[in-house]
Amino acid sequence: MVVWSAIAATAVLQQPALNLSFKDGVFSLNGSGVAESASIRPKASKESSSFEFSRGQLSIVWDKKGLTTTRGKSKSTTSFGDVPTSPRFFDRDQIEAHARDIAAGAKQRGAAGISGYEVVGDALWLMMRWEDSGRTNWLETLVPAFDDPLVGAAGGPVFDVPLGRVEWKLCTCTRLGAPITDNPGPISRYLGPGADPVAYLAGCNMMFRRAALQQVDGFNPLLTGAYDDVDICCRLNDAGWGIDYLPDALVRHDRAPNVTRDGQQMIRVPYRILASRAIFALQSRTAPDETAVVTMLDECRREWHAFAGQQLAGGRLTPDEHLRFVEQADAGVRDGLAAGRGPRLVTVIPDPPRHLFRPYR
Figure 1 (tube, rainbow, N blue to C red):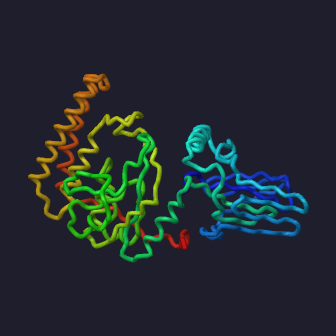
Figure 2 (figure 1 turned 45 degrees about the vertical axis):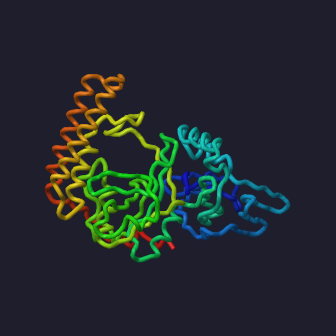
Figure 3 (figure 1 turned 90 degrees about the horizontal axis):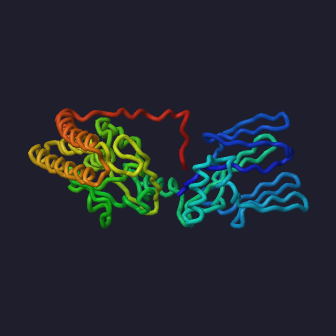
């Protein structure tokens, strides 16, 4: 899995006084009155273990030793091990995170390969690739799933950085919104129109076929806090599309504070969680059992009230915060039921702008 932004390295062909910067996938070259820019085009095969380039007396080779540059009798080899902790490419927080991961053996210091190259003016620009230690490229792992024309979505496990473990694996959820994030395979056990529980992909690690999203009217914009991943996979499944789970397509999820949780990952505002569950439970079937949904939500509300009481007793919520928490839980159930009884909203997925897209393979 690629875990750092692709970084460029130059091998000067003629002019040594060049400065290279990289931003948003575009290389900018300046020096000696030269000013050029270009977007890297992925020419090198993703499976290639070697790369060669030569011009005059200059020879550049990428192999398992790294990038070797030979000019006449002069030869040097590098795997760009200084790049992950270089202020030229990353800010302070990123550098500190990279250093920790390298020390823990979770990430490689040196580049794993070359994903693309471009000759511009008198410089060869290389797009280097950094990967998790021992893991394959995330995109390259997921894309082959779509060779099957019946697959509408594919995804993999998620490593939760705050918890320090893989928290989402093969996930399922009941039509009443009760999830289990680590189920025995194969995924086919949880697929098929009306499946309950139904398989879903963790929201921060999923890829979709555009035609499949278009057929099921895209994501539900009412689901602003949770269950958007469950809902879309449920609809794809019920429409006959396949869903593929690939254990090697792992991503790292560094959960940040948001309107629901604080910096310590504690839930502070349960409104969106409860509202989203109510909406999903009412709209996950064409004829939902509303009595069962209301009963489930009453139980959920009591559980969140009890949680708030525990946080108050432990000093993690003030009396005012506790009151707001309880009020938000009640409002989430109330508003979620009202919204869920209405029609499911649609997200229009347009056709791709062909002039901006090229086939991945």
